[in-house]
Amino acid sequence: SVSSAAPARAAPAPQGDRATIAEIAAGLLARPAATSPKYLYDSLGSKLFEAICELPEYYPTRTEAAIFARHGEDIARHVQPGSTLIDLGAGNCAKAAGLFPLLRPRQYVPIDISRDFLNEAVSRLQQRFPDIAMNALALDLSGPFVLPPAVEQQRRVFFYPGSSIGNFAPHEAIAFLRRVRENTSRDGGLLIGVDLVKDAAVLDAAYDDAIGVTAAFNLNMLRHLNHLLGADFDVRQWQHVAFFHAEESRIEMHLEARAALTVRWPDGERRFARGERIHTEDSYKYTPDSFADVLAQAGFATDAVWTDDAGWFAVIHARA
Ligand code: AVJ
Image (tube, rainbow, N blue to C red):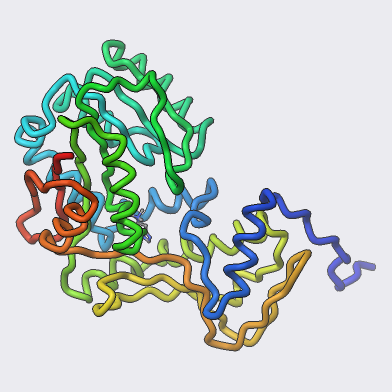
């Protein structure tokens, strides 16, 4: 006969390194619990993010692309051909590659934490654009960084699309952009995509879509945490919560416990009451003026701002 009891199974060993495990555990034990949004991106999470970018509710990706399509030539005049284009968080390098015909960089330096993914993308890209020198860098941009000598000094232009800057709180964004500026040449610049404040209903829908792709993206973090920490999150006991917090000018994403429960991992545990949350992501929204202020505090001067007709998203060029 077949036993109905699940076989007793040892919890899988944690796969994260020591620092990762310590960081995640500290976040889970904090009150309120919080985790870094970087844990949204395991291989499934990266695919779910790509799917988010195709949702009708998630306007940032297509709005930014439309701005590049409509104002590309003007943007290229500000950036100037022959620059060294340094791509922050390049991933598959597709966004920058789409702009090569317009921006015509002399050198392309994609930076990403994931070395294997990056090297593969760059070797394919180098074949398509043999005249652009390419130097991929596997760097964690969360700490201080210095570009190696292989990166040409001439007119360094940093490229930071997609409103990735929104994951930083404003004071962190300023600190990060200061470090960027320290690595820019005097004649260099920054081309950055920034999501703008708009009607809360539009923002809420973009982060809580009708078919639940963003919910899956958020919940998938629990599977990733199980893998890294050796935790025993039961994903079905949690639900996705996302809303615009107007006073903070940010979207907040949380995971909320559907019932009182305890999460366990090799060196610890955390009890959650029903309705208690883990804060998984912030996505800050700016106005053109509030972002010009962030740039100024980082030592950059806003040079040009391009937006869509609705004013939902901005592409900004700033000078060092
Ligand atoms: C990749 C940080 C720009 O904040 O809009 C999308 C991530 N989170 N849906 C964003 C995200 C939920 C995205 N960024």
